[in-house]
Figure 1: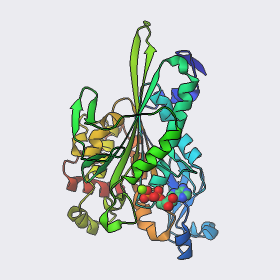
Figure 2 (figure 1 turned 90 degrees about the vertical axis):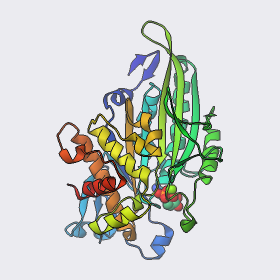
Figure 3 (figure 1 turned 180 degrees about the vertical axis):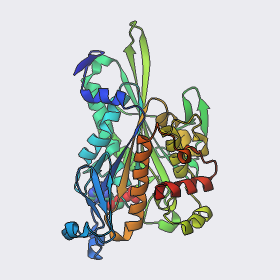
Figure 4 (figure 1 turned 135 degrees about the vertical axis):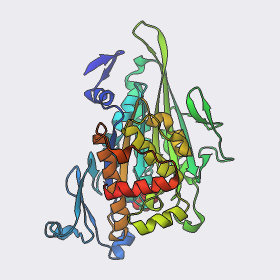
Amino acid sequence: TKEVNGAKMEGVAERVVNCGSRILVFVRLRPMSKKEKEAGSRCCVRIVNKKEVYLTEFANENDYLRLKRLRGRHFTFDASFSDSTSQQEVYSTTTAELVEAVLQGRNGSVFCYGATGAGKTYTMLGTMENPGVMVLAIKDLFTKIRQRSCDGNHVVHLSYLEVYNETVRDLLAPGRPLVLREDKQGIVAAGLTQYRAYSTDEVMALLQRGNQNRTTEPTRANETSSRSHAILQVVVEYRVKDASMNIVNRVGKLSLIDLAGSERALATDQRTVRSIEGANINRSLLALSSCINALVEGKKHIPYRNSKLTQLLKDSLGGACNTAMIANISPCNLSFGETQNTLHWADRAKEIRTKATEANEELHQVPESETDQAKLLLELQKGN
Ligand code: ADP
Ligand code: MG
């Protein structure tokens, strides 16, 4: 523990500063639903230990050891959360360090990635009884601010917005689509509500209401938001004394993102490339993966302009930013294909990070069109 600006900082904060912009990749398995159990669904995923996941088409919890010999695959991540992992543990492992970094004037972002129904919204927003990462992050932020009130005045602003079909909407004040503008601070959504938050109590209700404003697809009326991305931006502004005792303003921004369902953007075999090209690809989801690739590879040109989502996340992804990805998966054998896709992509994202300094021609390509991006994704999944 050391003193910084009169506040005690744990070792965790130092680690944040040192880890740069590498992406941490986590996996969270959701429990089998009652409906799935009643339908006699089998479980095809097993969390082997705190880091390892095992996926097999014929998995059955009871004969894991026997089935291990059958075809199946192990994946290793920064952490793998079982279906009984608490919201608090997911928050502490994936996001707490980023909240600490935001208080030091750094940006951070956490994405939930996975197919519709895999548990993204549960992880990010949660329920009243079991609040998720968004709410726990804000709660923790207020606690930390109180603990170091000697740092100066902290002002916390929240914005909650949606990107659907390349249209940006304010989830706290639904109305006409917002226009993205470039200003001194970067890309901003003009007219976006900046909600000044004073306590956690008000935040959960606010976010729940905002979530109800998310776009529902007409063809999937019972499922909200399978193609909409929800972004919570938490901006912390505060004043500190610099080395020469001048008072300076510091701003840290945390973006917590509940991404659209990945099922339409991902495909495993060549036959599906055509349907990807034909379907209305989620441009933002593909653009995001291109940007992450380019950032991790240290490319000069990062294709932020390819989509609304990546424009909005420009300052959260690049520069002084920490990024975490939570891949959400279902245990159900009927979702095997989607789970496999999610794990392959999450695994690849993790590998790219560790290969950041190695030359790898394929990964250096920055795709310009959606088709190229779709092909790149397929290649990544095949592990080329
Ligand atoms: P997504 O946002 O990825 O489409 P949801 O978060 O809506 O998926 O999850 C689908 C269903 O599964 C919801 O009813 C949700 O409450 C439940 N669920 C997801 N993850 C968990 C979990 N870890 N524990 C308990 N219930 C979960
Ligand atoms: Mg959802």
